[in-house]
Every structure is written in C-alpha cells, then in structure tokens.
Image 1: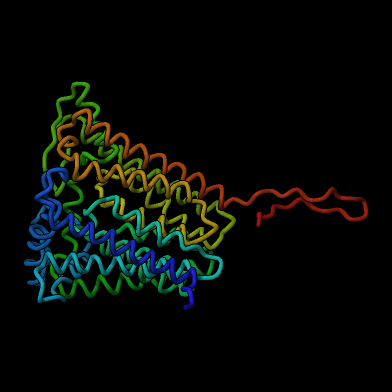
Image 2: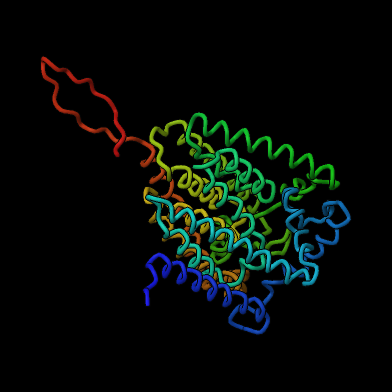
Length: 420
C-alpha cells in the first residue's frame, strides 16, 4: 500500500478539525436555551426574531426606515434576504447554513493561499481553531459573511487589484469596515486600480440598491443616536465608575446594552475623537511608509480594523470574527509582522466567549466579575492594537544598512536601503 503524502494528510486533518469544531458550534446553537452555562440562551434570537422581522420588511422593497435597530448600510439588505435561496428551510436554518457556507469559503481561500510557493498554511489552521473560541455566536450573526468579503479581497490582490477593490467595496456596503483593507495597497498602479475599482463598484451597487429599495440611507439616522455600549472601552470605564459610586445605569437601546446617565455623552465624544486620531495615524503611516512586502497590505488591514475597533463606541463579541479573519490572512504570509498580534487576538476571542454569552449578566450588572472580564478582554485588544501599529510602522520603514568605508579612489555616497 502506498502511504498518503504529508500535504494530503494535513489537508484531511484540517478538514476534520473544521468539521468537528463547526459541529460542536452548531450543537451549542441548537441547545442554546437548554444549557445554563451559556448564560440562559438568546444567542439565536437575533436571527429568528430581529433578522426575520427585517426580512419581512425588505421583502416588500423597503429598508426598515423607522426601526431604531436598523443601523446597517444598504448592502446588508440583500444579505438578510439571502435565506430565501433555500426555501425548503426555515429562515433560521437557512441563515445558519449560509453562514457555514461563508465559513467554508474563507477556509478554502486561506488554504489555497497557504499552498502557494513561499506562503504558509498557518492562516487556515488559525481560522479553523480561532472561530470556535467565540462559541456559537458567529453562526447567529452575519459577520462571517462580511469577513469573507474582506478575506477574499486581500487574497485576490496579487492576481487582480481590481477584483480586490470590488470585493472590498461590496463588503463595505454591508458593514463599512471591509473598506479599510484598501489602506495598505502598494503605492502606484496597484492602489489606483484597487481604489478605482472599489469606487466604481460602490457607486454602481448603491445605484442599483437605491433603485430596488426605498429608504436606502435611513441607517444614518440611527447611527447618530448610538451611545456607549457596555463592552466598549468607554463602557469599561463607566463600569469601573459604577463600582466607584457613579449613578449611571444600563439600558437596552439601538440593539445593544448601553450606558445612560451623566457624562455618557462625553465618553461617546471621546471615542469619536480617538477614532479620528487613529485614522490620522494610519494616514501618517501610509505617507511615511517606504518598504512594502507581500504581507504589508494584510498587516495594514489588520492594524486599521484593530484601531477602529478599540476606539469604537461598540465592541460586540462578533467583532472578533473580523479580527480573526484578518489575522488569518496575515499568517498566510511568512513575512507578516503581525504574528504576536494574532496570538493576542486568540486570547481576546477566548475571553469574549466568557463575556457573551457565559457571563453576560455579570457584565450588564457591572459586578466585579463582569468588570474583570471586560478589563481583561479590552486590555488584550488594546495591547494588540498598540503592538500591531508599532510593528506595522517598523516593518514599512527601511533600515539603514552601513556601507563599506569610502576610499579616495572609490567614494561611496550614503544611501538608505531596505533590508531583505
């Protein structure tokens, strides 16, 4: 008998690991209401109540303009209508099946990228092992589908910058953040092709959505009213303030548990200011960057999304899906500067699984246990964001390589060279 080749064994092991982990996630989702350890259930409620309600409105050709919970760009409409492609299943069942399909697409894209010469298979393994740390939450949110747009966008860059820009634009029309993956495009023709393609795709798609649906930009009104969610950095500050005697309280509004009371608006304003600072730092990096490798666009995408995540007024657990996907893309390259950041994100994802749904009641009531969980999770994200930016900055600034001493016969000018 001939023994199977090692690459085939690794692929079979990867597939088995994916199937086993997703089967466990699916089992937990089905038994969500029955397991007290999962915080009393409710994870799937987002799909079979909220998404299904929006589906009924979207099916009539209009966005939920008067629903305060509708805070998503118009591209989210077709995605929430997509379960109609499987009419033999309930809306909930079809949604979960399509989420698993997007999960498989991400795995296939990472696996294919990792098998190219000079690339690494670690990204596919990272995605397979990292997503279950969020327990079953990713299966009941559409963040896996959005992450698929960003992952495919980055992995198509080397072959087609235009396709890269198109996928990034389609993802941005669903949940904005995938547009950040274009920040690290190599300067010159690649940037022009990718950004031009993204602009054309966005304009054409928006025009089509505005033709098919009414009120496509109603989500902007709801975004302006967002407060400080309990799981954000500002929410962690206010949670600590409640332990010190602050009289604020937590209330369900705009689809999340948010703080209300004195000083909340100042914390929200501070978050917006820090987001602007983060954007300025990213622009400064792009202007000053001199050295690009194949990993630079991947690393820049992860850094950008990390900085915008930690400065956001909302950091829901499913946001970690985005970061895990981008970290997995970084790990497909052997030249990435973000390997330590990827490990920090795994730890943050594990703590997020405790935050929601396991200890969510503790977080809502700002007990010491809940506060400790959020300090730990957000502390890991803060460390990851700082480390990510520092390593990105250093990797894109070429080192000075000392040249041989000049002689009178052969003077050598000083010049700056990139390290190999």
